[in-house]
Length: 251
Image 1: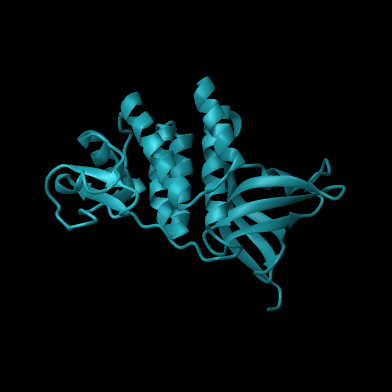
Image 2: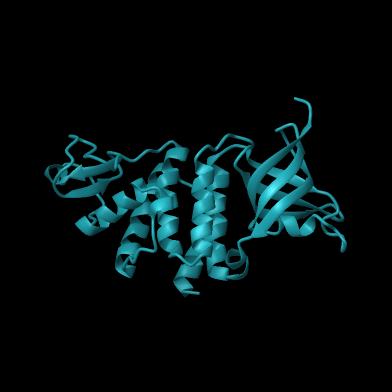
């Protein structure tokens, strides 16, 4: 495929020095998925491109690309920045982890469809001060499908019932009703915690307001989601370890 200049909408989430004065900027785009842009001369003092590829900048970028390998940034417009994600260490750690999660879910230039709106909305809400842990858990649950895991959250994964008390079972791939509690391994979540897990797994993020979730419920859900990922996806992300350290220190 010949190279052509294409305008894309995207979010820069990672950058690193390349050669003497260039930068490699990784971007999650609405139009071409996740890919890396070569930004020539970005480290020179008078560069007009450098500010457009700071971490958590977003807007429209014109790139020379064949949709394979490195693309080259030519120019940009209407680029802004998620200011709080850039400056607040805690919010930054959540944002870096979620973007890293996306980076591992898709191959380069793969069409990510509605997942772009998911990450854009998640970063926007975290930047606006909505509970980053709740947003993080919602994204993790809804990203399971991108990793080939689609939990059954609407009805019992064994018998299909939609009424009664439920728990979550990793081995059956979803929620189970009370009559199966002694038949399979389950997470032993409370009814309220299961309800929260189901809500976060199913609701459109755009519809989620600034909800109040107790620390105990968030901790229980965090433990449950971590177990689901360990047993079904088995990722080992440095950004997650850093985020866990931030939580431990309560920075």
